[in-house]
Length: 432
Ligand SMILES: [Zn+2]
Ligand SMILES: [Zn+2]
Image 1 (cartoon, rainbow, N blue to C red):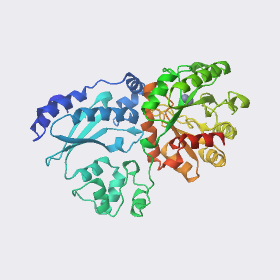
Image 2 (image 1 turned 90 degrees about the vertical axis):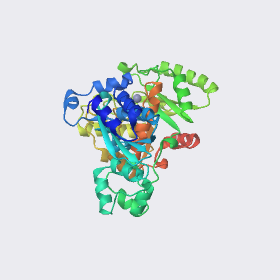
Image 3 (image 1 turned 60 degrees about the vertical axis):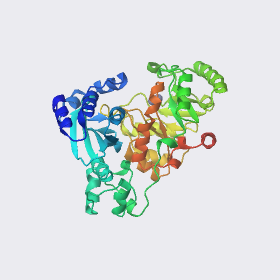
Image 4 (image 1 turned 30 degrees about the horizontal axis):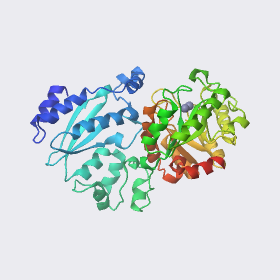
């Protein structure tokens, strides 16, 4: 639809009127953050021109929230909610879907191409059928097929009431993939999923000492604003020259700055490092030095092309180092851009289950690494997870919502995630 078609369609609908029509036209042309624009521009051409375009959740989710802010201001609109793949927190989505709830019986759909070329669908719903409409527009198709087998029909009520009428407990959108959620909901055995409010800190953050943009103080203050109890400052280690990796001397200088800042701010600042796992699996600092950090994140940043066996033993060696607490972005994938490196995840997890090690869900919009399937395996083996942002600027601390989405899709609960723990419990774990 072009702008005029949308406007005509909208104004012809009873209860919508010119104001909403104008607002929707406005959001089609909304301006957006340069960082996200850059991410989208870097996507391969074939993805941009292909029939079924794909978009990062990290791009679609904030955009959907911007649309909602605008639409919520319109008279006649009772509520606007995210539905579809974005609500299910799929890492890659093909559209933004919104449900516009009105206080009159009206069912319709408005579609247009939004910012970055993302198709946007706005579904209209009456208040009475809100639950049913949220369910069918959230999907997934497989989930809906299973619900239809149980007798799903267009009835009134909330989502909870619709699920309950089918003999099921409420199924959170993140689990609606047609896997095992229906069986679990029948037995009232769904996990009590982690939510963003459970996050108590962020354990992977870069400052302007290495390749980050923000000074430590700005990051700490933003973390306080987010309600965190703690953060870990984890700049790059010396051999990662391209990212201004820190020498021992500069780290000791940073520790002094942390000690000073700690006196004036009401948040625990952990002394951390993102230490490079070198090609042979050894680490970029000696053990005596690593022992002095509160948190050690170990990650691969070089030599991605190693064979499966070599890369697997490289990472296992790092896991077995007693000073390493977290393995950062395990598979190295960059969504829509770079495949994960060759790895035997099964073998890695078999070793890890007997070690004191957590694996990271990296919340960068283009990583979201680990992925859902890995989390199911990890959870079964009792392996702990840390949800980190790997922030390189203050604003990126908000990306935690993306990592939380991955954890939710992975059936994870508060107890599985070390940065959902109180600071005392976390410090005991890190020291242990
Ligand atoms: Zn890294
Ligand atoms: Zn990092």
